[in-house]
Image 1 (cartoon, rainbow, N blue to C red):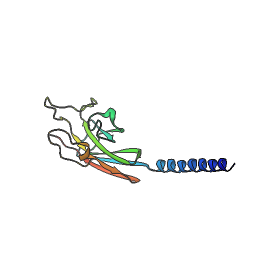
Image 2 (image 1 turned 45 degrees about the vertical axis):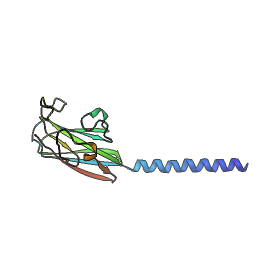
Image 3 (image 1 turned 60 degrees about the vertical axis):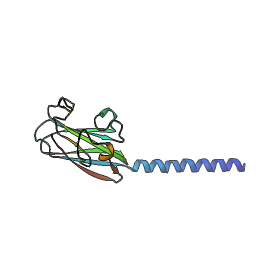
Image 4 (image 1 turned 90 degrees about the vertical axis):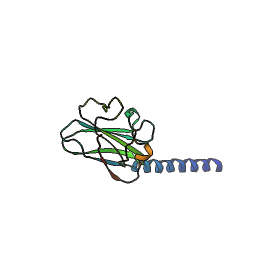
Amino acid sequence: MRTRLFSLLLLGLLIFGSSKVLGQTDLEKETLTLRIEDLIPQTGVVRAALFQSSDGFPNNTKKAFALNQSSVTANNVTLTFENIPFGIYAISVYQDLNNDHRLNKSILGIPKEPIGFSNDPPVRMGPPHFNDACFTFDQKHLTITIHMRTR
C-alpha cells in the first residue's frame, strides 16, 4: 500500500512537472521581425530563409527552419516570422529581381541579384559561414536589420 501510494505520488509529480515544462516551451515561442534595407525599389520579390544550424545555410532553403517573402515596393521591406522557438539562428536573403525563384549567379558563381545575411558579415570569396551570421533569439520580440548588397 505504501509503495503504491509513493508510486502514485511520483507519477503525479512527473505529470505535473512535465506540464510545467511544456507550458514554458509554449511561452518561449515569439516573434522575429526582419527589416531588409537597400533593396532595388519596385523590382521583384525579396526571399528570406531562417536557419537553425549550418546545415544548408545559406542556399539550401529545403533545410531552412522557416521561409518568408514579400513583393518589393520600396527600398526596404519588413518580414515577420511568428512562433519561433528561442535558439540560435542565421538568416539569408536575396532579392529575386526576375521572380524566377532562384538566386541568379554569373558563370563564376557570383550573385547577380542583391543578397544579405544576418549580422551583415563581409562577403568574400563565397558566402559567409553560419557562425558569422548567427544570432541568439531569446526575447519576446526581436528585430534584425539586414542591408542588401550587390556586386
